[in-house]
Length: 431
Image: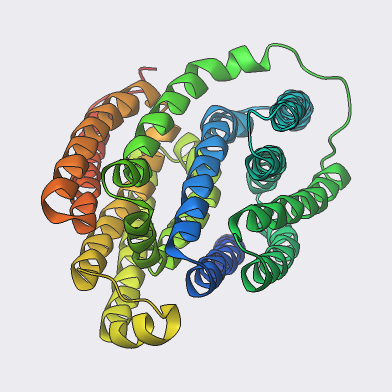
């Protein structure tokens, strides 16, 4: 091949990567803006207690979608690129059909149970309705997240973006209506989320059904094939969630829902940086698996480090602007003032910087299938984090809870770096 042809091919490859990552970043910016506006609508128009209830429900939803992503999404993104095109398609279609059946049956059963408990007087009509609505939210959100993962595996972030545009439009319209017209607003906000997830999922399904297709005979044994990776990944996510989101329940039990609302109102301002990392990581995982397979460990690590450096720089720019404008943000944008506001904001900034770098570098360990090591690391971090969170709330109030998260992320980052150094000393993947 001539030098000109090689240069042309390299230029086309860089252009394609730029297009893929641009779409992923735009998509996550869209989701970040939507989540920010949802939180803002509820914070500005609802009581702190109502917003606290929404936070606890949304946190539980993150647990559900994260467990699915850990057991199915992550391992599938690692294993699928190694398969033939037809088997790759069959894996994606079979897991969609099988997981959808189980999710639908469980959600319907729990929704009917909520209805029966309401009719029997064991639950108030409000709680029974909220429970049934939440079952729908869980089912539709799980389906949508799986389909988004499938599109990302096929490196089609533009299709994900189109589906997410529909999701965001319906979500914002529904939450705005509930926040401005109903009290309490949290149940209706979840109903809007369920409808938006259903619509966005249907559009994503149409994209995958068109190409590569979601039909054909189902493969058997896929769940066992995913188990060696997914089991440890799911345990790791459960442990990680316990300290990355479990602080809400510690604060709710130790202090009150008002403190939960204060913590998450300040945290909401940092979500654009967090969601940028999430979007890049979704697309980065299958690409890193391909880099590792074709180039090796060290070239993959150099590319991951470059991404981490860019993300840290962008985050620092955003955090600096937010700090300079913080008085206006709290007085005009949130229309809220909280005790220890500045301390909470600085601690959240530190936590998100640590978690962003750790999240991207951890991609190398996912590709190397080091799920057991990551689970052990997350367990140690979670125990120390929750203990620090509980002690911090006792002595420093809501701001003290963030100290536990900072400690947990610092332990995780140091541990991830140590595991990567260990992998570099090995001649091949020992898993």
